[in-house]
Amino acid sequence: MRLYIAGGCSEHGRNSFLLTGEKVRILVDAGRMKEKPDEPFPLLDEETIAGIDYLFLTHSHTDHTGAISFLAERGFHGRIVASRATLEHIGPLPVASYALEDIGEVMKELHPDPRFSVLYGRAGHCIGSVWYEFRLDGRAVLFTGDYEEQSLAYRCDAIRERAADVAVIDCAYGTEREDAAEHFEALRKLLDSLVEKGAPMLFPVPSHGRGFDLVRLLAERGVTVVLAASLVEEFRNSLDRAFWLREEFQDAVMNLKNRDIGHFEEAYRAALALGLSFPDEYRHDAILVRDSQLVKNENRQIALGVASVGGCTILTGKQDPASYARALLNCGDAVFCRISVHQNIKEMLRLKERNHFRITVPYHCRELLAFDEPDIRVLAPGDALHF
Ligand SMILES: [Zn+2]
Ligand SMILES: [Zn+2]
Image (cartoon, rainbow, N blue to C red):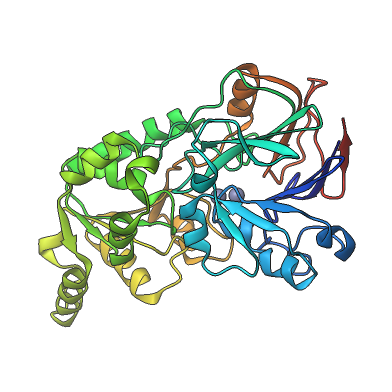
């Protein structure tokens, strides 16, 4: 058996791992890397691509799915397998696709093909995100995908007591010191102090991810939330909501005090026309916009307005170096308080201890990692592991 790293180890993006057994070839994820525009796609040649039988997707984010057309244009004609929600988020596909839920239940060994079995669990990273354990040719290989056990919104089937010859584990946060629980602790304190102060808050969030964790924290504090229409839609239209979202999150959303973003924008324009910098009636609210880097001019204006009345923009994820979000942080008009959607080294090692992995391969981290443990293998794109 061979595991080939087509991308995603010792780099951030184009996650793609090829498992070659005696009779079947399975690719896990096919991502596109934003950071390297000259080489954004997985390292796979046409002959290899044409021989792939299955592409299993862990979730819909483009660093895991952005190379599907690249594969199709180079002769990929295998089958795509992913959760129903992931397939729905990606949209139309160039080849036949199958929903995991139609193959079988979560956390059960499934046999979609006589050549291998697969087990999937929810990964706690976003709606539709899963981890996989494959068994073929007498070997077991586990892929965590993007993995977060502590999410306040998404359900996770924690990986425990699994035995695998190789485990490819999320380690995106690398040497960052704080783990998910510590980040949430810091965020809770920050929110409590802002709520006490009674100043407006702006949260720029991405699609499908951290926004839901925030909604729960704000709802639990009784804060009125002005929610981007697309986030409301995302919640209302989420496929199999109860399956992907934690019960505590659903309860919190039931009690959420929510104001229409259209009305807020009108009030904001009216305030500006009167020479004010922010509408008075929204001074105690939290505004969530789906624009994590603050690309849109109207959201930049809101950030300035929030700052002008003593409020704060709170960034909860990575900022692109040239983004407005980063500029705001640098000038002190925004604060950074992470919501974890990945693991750091500490969490990766904890996961390793709780399972029985013969070889552990960290992925999703652009740092050059080094470990004393001989069973942790730091690999790079183009490397292969025979086992
Ligand atoms: Zn992701
Ligand atoms: Zn990712």
